[in-house]
Amino acid sequence: MSGEAGLDVSMKIKELFKEKPLITVELDHELEKALATMNEHKISWVPVVDDRGEFTGSIDFIDVLYHTLSLLQIYALLDIWKYRETDLSCIRNFKIKVREVMETKKTVPHRSEASFDTISWDQSFGEVLNKFCETKKHRFLLEDPRSILAQSDIVHLIARTLSDSYGEADIEDYLEEQPKLVIMSGSQSTLEAIIMIAKEKVSCIGIVDEFGVLIRNFSASDIKSFHIADFSSLLLPIKDFLDIFCTKPLIKIYASATFSKSMHCLVDNKVHRIWRVDLEGKPVGVITLTDFLIAFSKLIKK
Image (cartoon, rainbow, N blue to C red; front, side):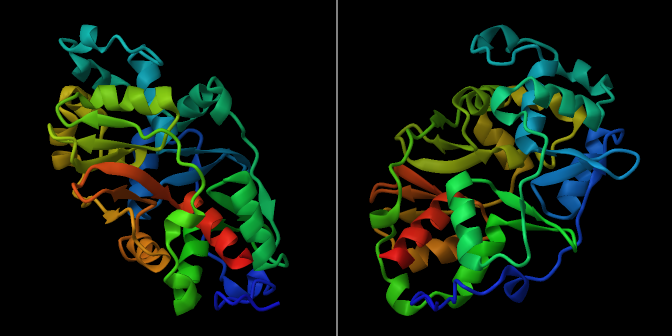
């Protein structure tokens, strides 16, 4: 079956994608080494292996955020004010191991799974696309040879093959109902932003100015260049923190953007989400890679 979107969805994964080296970290690696590995390879997630090379799970930047909160003993608390005068620099003496982050992860119900969902090189693109949409997983493990297939790999393939007629469709017509946006002022502290990500179970927060105009995005991956010795910086206003630790520009589109425009904003800027704004620049929605794949699945079935 050949999809009118310009992509034959019956083609097998092994015909469309090549094996990629699998980057891992070990349980007894220090967390800063794991973060450096993710930084070096420009990844936001990494599998964790034991001393025999067996998979024990994975960590990502959100897991690091949860562990940060547990160290500060403020997990899921909103009484931020008592920490305004806390000397957080004392935490720089912690020699955190990946193993400890994994232990914290087990205590968080919606992030405690350790097993990897797998797919086969012999499955069709259509089957794998449906699995990404149904599970809303960010990546799957491929066996024999072992590799990872991520949402971004699928989106990049779609970008190379999408036909013009499909690209001109209004993406808003194919988006699922958007969850409530999580927004905060640029003057609020970074620690408040981290707590908000944990409390609201979201992957990102929109940062707005005093007029409600979107000025920055904060996500768990923004701490990838953040080191243990910098913990006192968590009390900085989130806008200032991002100016220091994150040089990535804010990627936004108007709410009326086409499917093609939205897709190329994701692909060309190598980001996992783009913000949708109204004519005044105020946030009205966010499109993640998951949202895009679900929208694409609807588009080609229409």
